[in-house]
Length: 488
Image 1 (cartoon, one colour):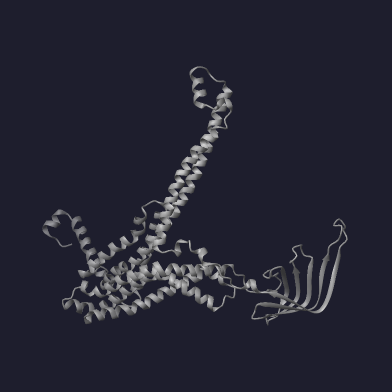
Image 2 (cartoon, one colour; image 1 turned 60 degrees about the vertical axis):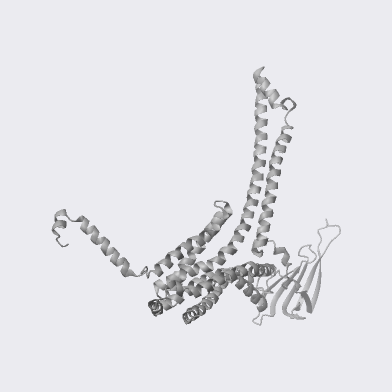
């Protein structure tokens, strides 16, 4: 490897890894903020958060790699152009295409690594991340009794404390309803104060009550009697023990989530899509047969005189006129049966359309694994020539340009995928459209950079504007002035 290749790679690798981790951090923060409400008040612990952060960071990697490639290419070649290193390299007889070779090899290899990662690692990360997120959503909030509000987190009990001291453990003026029997508010406990603490590694909650009474509504026999009796038990100190097992994070079987398209590799996605297509073809045949059978079965419900529409109706037109009432009955019955058949066919067609749309989503997800991987190389084709043209390093202009092109790529991808899922365009065309558009842009910028174009310099456009203005002024002059050549 030549020294110039080492120089280019050294200038590129550092910004690439830096921008990659920055982009992953930004995308990860955005993802965690989206689910922030699911974590509040559940006392999940650091281990659960660390596991979620790790899996979601793997989930965001396929999106972060193209953006990191674009940004690092802009920074690398922008720095080389800003410090006239590209000018020195070109003046020694080395073309820009040769300068891009080491980074292009890196981008080409990264494309295959990104596809392998997206096909093998990301589905497993999604499976672990979303199964854990589901368990977090199902977990009860941590025990938090607030002043003047009934707390129903403990199964079978409703607890209210009118005052809670600053230590977080002492409660004043406590009321407890016992609903374990499921027969209403027949058991109530009132206490002047209470103290709560946990035992056995926080597996049980102890509520120690002081100076109170326990009231129980004693059922009367017969029930028609209006007399009511209450049993009261006074106490100076009493303890209630509650199990906190329901507050633990229980893990669900991950295989229940494995059927989602986000948890599958390319081979599995293709297999599911093909099996769906075969099944939908059978459904279409069965629905066609069912519609015909439904029609003939519905015709059996006609009155005896109207069983044969062809034999009765046509004969009546040719030979005799049916009574008006019979004609109306025939028309109404036929119209009702036609509406029923139409509704049945429309319902079957809607089911089939939704099934076909679901099949398209699996195919779109399959193609996305290729498009996201190839986007790494396409972003390099855009970033490297643009950096050589702009000749601005740092994080100012490169970040701005990267955001613009990434937004273009993101919007085109979403639009193409939506059209592909809805059947407006063929699935390959819709999914590959964003890559094709940016690839053309990359080739254009590469051609401009090779020819040392001043595409983003304001002076070029000022000169072009002045020439255009002079031509307009010259065309508006009188012909006599044009011949004499009077200066304007």
